[in-house]
Amino acid sequence: DVKVTQSSRYLVKRTGEKVFLECVQDMDHENMFWYRQDPGLGLRLIYFSYDVKMKEKGDIPEGYSVSREKKERFSLILESASTNQTSMYLCASYGQISGNTIYFGEGSWLTVV
Amino acid sequence: GEDVEQSLFLSVREGDSSVINCTYTDSSSTYLYWYKQEPGAGLQLLTYIFSNMDMKQDQRLTVLLNKKDKHLSLRIADTQTGDSAIYFCAQGAGGGNKLTFGTGTQLKVEL
Image (cartoon, each protein chain N blue to C red):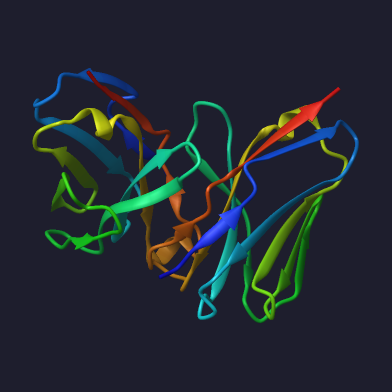
């Protein structure tokens, strides 16, 4: 089974802290995504990556950056966390071998106080 | 830009059918998807339909696509308490292209 693992399920950070959210997939997928999920807004795409060291902005990239140094790992970085970044963050991956299925991690709940 | 809309809540009795509706704006979408999110979990792909299809059936799930009206629906027959979850509609061009998700519909199944 494909596995997308997000290293932290629950985090509490202070305003202004630098935050790293890590995501690892074990199926050699080329494409990886970071979404945030907020009630009433659904999922919104922050950044995605279609290859190592490649990244593309999604719909709401402001306040975020990403890193893809290795194929299996896609990191989301909040340079200076703010309270409006309190949310559920979902990582996803897709590859040629996965047909039409995008696989999601279980999510990381981030609270910024 | 692309927009996908869903109603936020749906409540049904156990054993009844549930119908979750979705409207989308991007007529170039190649694939339309339904994802399920159980409490505290990530999203799980339930089913998808290619844009040249009108209907797809998979056990208790039936997907209907009205391309003219840009309307997608998911029917769950014989709804069970285990079907209680948030259901997301999504549209995309297929492959690794990014998906645009709806707001999600919270389905509550009552005894």
